[in-house]
Length: 615
Ligand code: AMP
Image (tube, rainbow, N blue to C red; front, top):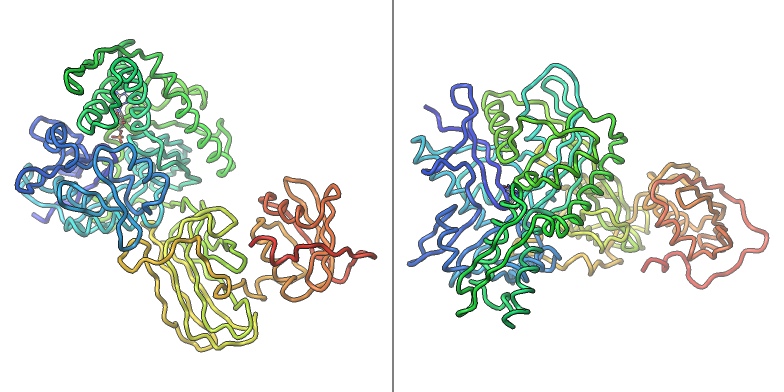
């Protein structure tokens, strides 16, 4: 028998493994018949590694040797807000990786990267599978949140490789949930609302036969059931401190017990109105004996649930869809068992949510289906989209978006850039993900350095940059110098490898590129995004153009005049040019037109020449 091929829902809190056996989807069960395997790793005596529910049991006595929720740390900088929150909240030690700026998890005397911990979780799953079915899977489809970035996806792939698994495909969790639905021939539009332990994902998917087309996807990688648990912990620990004067956060073991109790209480309150919390001898001889009501937990959770609905709003808008276009709403993720959540989602979509979908296992089931189809050389036709804009920095600390968010993948985009100053022989392009027009406000994925440019006059070099996103959402980048015909010294340094470089904040303008002239003919008219409009203005500035630029966007119409490349006057409710340029940044989608040679009679000098405005 060939080794089994499996689908793995690698969750923040729990994992689920499914496979297709004799044409039927089978869920992996542990000895107790449980299908949820906690995503927990604990290092026991003599450095023995425990995973799953064994690790949870050990964690109760050795919180500093027990890692959970590492999915939130994968592919992230130590300085990321998400990581910092984990540093403050988790019972185990998280520190900065001195080589590369990523994260290290300290369990006992050992240090691990989040990928290594995830690999241990995966190995634990494979051991269980082998023990149960007598064969060790070698290939898998692994699911990730749709909103996972490139580095988070790559981290997941590295974890799988370390566990000895070949990833047939990384599949977005909402798409996997859609795949788990029984197939019908009717075309339909479904909304997948996935509120799990650590992340929230929302996707709008069009299904027709075997074709699954994601219309738009969005989410928040720090919004999940854990956050509700955290709020309950805060509430309980505050009243404990008032009674005893003891700050529970200073006692890792007590905090671990409190988190566990808070989560249990939250789950119980999904089917009862009140729940008692009893933690004997929580610190010294002080016990926690209290009660918490469903009403109070709902009050605490409501702002988080509202945040998820704001993301639904944003996604519907991006897909140009209206709530009445949705045929089915599918709830995924353990937290969707909360009655308040169900009520709020049903109210939002003005319809009951689809029944018959198990929120815990749907994602793994869909992944198993896809894995089995891929094994047979088929697979559903999955037309996914990329969740985050990808681009490079250009002169002026600006982001040049090469692949905007919600672009269908796989995709390949190539763009020509040019040098920004005379005799420039080096170009450093920082690969960025994010939507902020200011480059350094986005996340840095790596960089490409071209070191032997011809040193032409500015705007004359020709450098082609190609971004390619494969079906798993992984980015491949290539840059080539068209003047030498060579692909020169392309160094893509992943942010988390030992050679990691400076964070995006330290971009050097003199090595940056500008968009190439041929992309920005001066007489072109929009519609364009604000960042592209800035490129046009930069081009006009660099080429010392004279004329009028008419703008129109959500912030209203405006006009700019340029004389020999400098902005001399702007008209938008009598604002001066600097304000008008700020306005452009706020314009989002808009239209513009450039009328060459059209000038004001009395051009007015302003203090800030264009090139300095955004420094
Ligand atoms: P997942 O990542 O999909 O495994 O979801 C796990 C999250 O769902 C955790 O935060 C759990 O506390 C939460 N959860 C599981 N069951 C329930 C329940 N019955 N009521 C409320 N939350 C639940």
